[in-house]
Image (cartoon, rainbow, N blue to C red; front, side):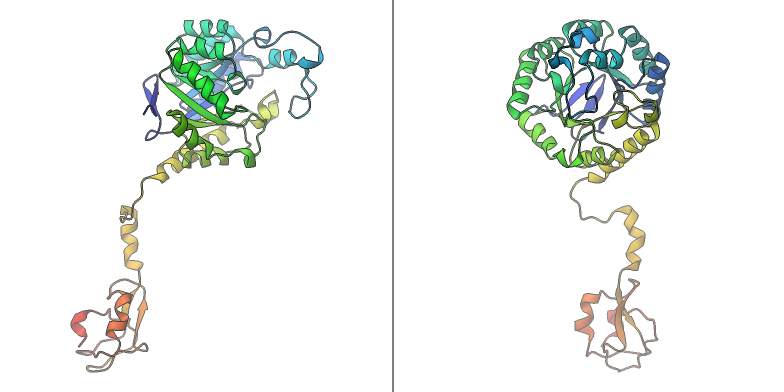
Length: 350
């Protein structure tokens, strides 16, 4: 099995803490100060890594006004030209080194989704520790092969992909040198409806493709990542922003700093709660044992008097005989006087 990978010394997979990726995407608003501030926000929120997207408008599409290059109904970017959207959303390449350095200063991994071979070459010069293939690029086998050839760990998002397309992408990655691969369940809608998430797919991805699996999440809020963690997600990727009110292409489905921090905390708590099947008494429950029920005298009972449901009962706390012994005791007699409130024990029962 290859269900563990390692990015910059951090093990990722079942049995390891969930690897949480803060997706910067377009939320810098074309201001490098915002991009650098978001790195610190990611660190303060408890993320493990910050992820960029490396493209230029003319490397991801072309400057064309014809109908195929206009965004149709069904997305938040309806009516815009692809070129204009990507011109607004891209992270300038000349910022990348500063962002990588800022991430390193804060102890965060920093890597990116490249969108063509020139981006891979550029990121190799920055010693990117891993590569992420975006959902829309899962059908670009040439790009997957180029990333795989670097021998770096790869994470592939599977939004919109059939299982056959996922299998093809995985095969291309492995055939071209990738030995450390992870897959992310993703619904490529912005925002994504919770009822379409089908989080049980995460476990199926891991089993089917023998690799760690996780979630690239575009739902609103933090509920879905927490649910994914309880279902075995090894990776959670979530967009974040300084302030949704600032606007931008991705802001409407991104978390603000306090929300991202809450998500990280909840994911960590949820994962720690999974544990293993156990019926052992936990240390925190030890003090509560005394509040269990047991058998007590609820009236003064004279020596030789018969025990009945009127003079003995199952009540809290747990200092007397267990309630299951009540049928054995009824009809027997007291060996001596038993004051009201005495826990029953076998030495006072004839």
